[in-house]
Structures are given as C-alpha cells and as structure tokens.
Length: 463
Image (cartoon, rainbow, N blue to C red; front, side, top):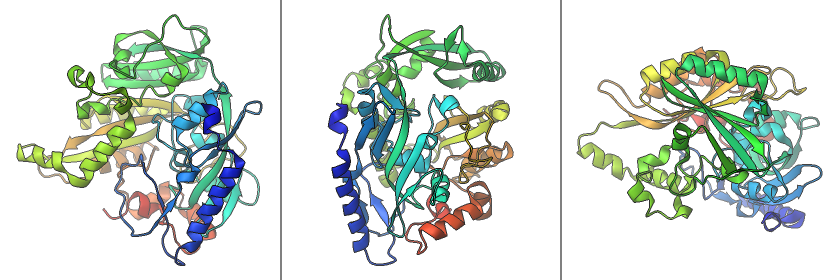
C-alpha cells in the first residue's frame, strides 16, 4: 500500500508547476486561497470571493527513504495516507496528530500534537526542510539554516498567511507491530499531575520505556494517564473501530493492546468522544452505522453543515433550549500550572471529559525562541488541554464570554492557545502572543502585496 501512495518526483514536479501557473493566471494583487475539500478548522471561514487554487495533485507521498528514515511528502497529504505509506516501511512520523484527514502541511502551518509529543515535540520540529509557495508566487526552500531560515521559523502557526507548503521533508522513527497500553487511575487532580511529572522525569514505568503518554479527565475525582509502550508481540488485540469505544475502555481496563495503526487512530473513530453528540455511541444506532462512516471527517462534515444552516439549533430553541456557545479549544499550559487551570475549568465550564497531552520542545540550537509565532519556552514541560463541546449562553451573557474567559486564564498562567477555533483577542494582545514584529517582518518579505490575509484576520477577524 505504501508504494501505491508514493507519487514520485516526476508527478510532484508537474503538480508544483501547475500550481504556480494557476497562481500566475490570477489577476495581480488579487487575494489567494486554497480550494480544499476538507478542513479541520472550527472557526468561521469567510468567503473572500477569491478563486481557489486546485491543490488536489499535491496530496501524496513523494518517497520514503527507509534507510535514512526520511519521508518526502506533498503539503496536502493526509496523515492517514502518510501513515499507511510509512508503516509499509516499518516507520512512522515522529508525531501523528489524532485525526486522519489532518494534512501534513496543515499540521505544520497550524500546529498539531499527540502522545509522542513529550519526547518529539510538535510536528513542525521533525521537519527538515519545506518548499513553500509564497504570496509573491515564488517557490522557496526553507530550512533551519540558509537564506530562508526566517520563513522556516515563522511558518509554524502561520495558518497559510505566509504561504502554502508544497513539499516537506520529515524525519521518521521505527515502530513495532503493537502498542501495549496501561491506564493509570488517579483520585484527584493533584495526584494526576504528580504522576504525570514523575513519568516525564523517569520516561519509564515498571521497567518499561514510555513511548506514548496522554490522559483523560472524566471529573475532578476520576482521571487517567495512559502509558503506551511499543511491543513486538501481543497476547490479544482490541478493536475500537466498530462497536467498542476507545475512551470508555480507559475506564474499564487496566491493560490493553492495539496494533500500531489502530493506536495512532484510536481517537479518530469517535472524534475523541465528540461523536456522542451525533448519537452514534448509542448501541442501537451504532449497530446500524457502517464502519466506514465512523470517522472524524464524516462527523466534521455533519457539524459544518449544521453550522451553515442551523437546523438542529433552531429546533432545540423552539423546544425551549437556550442558545449555545461553541467551546472547542486546545490550550498549552505549563505543567506546574496545569492543576490550577483544570480546577478553574471544572469549576467554571461544564465540559467533560478533557484530554491531556504533555509536550516539550525538542532540544535544538535555534535559541530560546525557536518558533516566534508560538513561543513556548524551551526546556519547559507543558500540557495540552483539549476540550470540545458547547455550553449554554446564560441570561445576561453573550456568545463568546466563556471563550474570552478561557483566553484570559490561559494568558494569566503563561500558556498559549491554538488558533484552529474561535478566538476573541484584541489586536494588541494577539500580536503580543503570536509573533508581533517577527511576523510582520517575514510577512512583508514573502507576501509584500498582501495577497494572503494576515494571521489576525484569519484567526480572529471581526468579533
């Protein structure tokens, strides 16, 4: 299967030439956007009226170098296809975001995370170099060192406002056939965070290496850390791609085994736990749904249809339900302040469960601020806290109040928030957090005519 997904350099070169021709054919100074069939963004995407560049020919793996453990990948390649191609060589990307249709280019320009991030950092940290189609219409190769180092450093978290990646070279790591899971239960948040800190320090559990690490908070008195360890053998293999539900197994089992592929996609089948809003976790409904529809991109299309038309929301309001505010966010909190954030959140925002994923920037020689648009501190442990639901807009409140409160608390705790969903920052506060003068300088160099919207316009817009 991996060979089938490797498009080769010839087809890639032709696809890039076609993309440049499309851009050159647009009227000068006209805005530019991509025509994409899928998206994992959860913030409004206004219609600019700009024609979309067809990037459908840039969705494959160019080649996998098994010996060098490097993949050459087109920017629109989904992680589902990338994983299939690399597993065929006994390898995987160093960080595989949770959802199958996230693209490699999207994860790098928009950030991503998973349970290997405590040792491998964020997806862009395994990028060796990338080719970027800039707003000026040029293809430039950006690398950690060289004439376009500034673009390489500013590209992560730029969300297409500096250009679009057409090729990325990424480092891979070897895999085993299976992953052994151990679900460790904790009775309170203090014990949970102490356990997490101990695992991050030791990188070992009962003599076994910790290869993957994440957690789930079901309530203030029930939370879990899941430790994953590569294994060449398994006494059994569980399957959470059909009737069984992975996140429920965390509460039901102390030990489990998954194939490495099913482990990487363990969250996709039920979109973590968000598929319950679509009733497919009910046994009677689930039996009727073919497996091919139990996946995050199917649920995403349903949700985006509802966001456009509002039929279900209108029905609920006719039944007397309060209007809802969407609270779909991932935030990075310093490890030593995560307990404070979780306590505030559980006391304030009625959303459970909550996902936890530790991360640490990788050791490198890029200095204390290696990624200016998402300046996590080098040498510091963080915890990604993910929560995805909606809350009632109570009388006297306005839509966005809960998200604004979350932004304020995250800032007070020296954290950062991903920008794939709703944001409410004022301009000055936003640029203080997300690049400021560094971004403006790189933007002027690579998109001098402003054909791509700037980061604030894309992430916040008008609120």
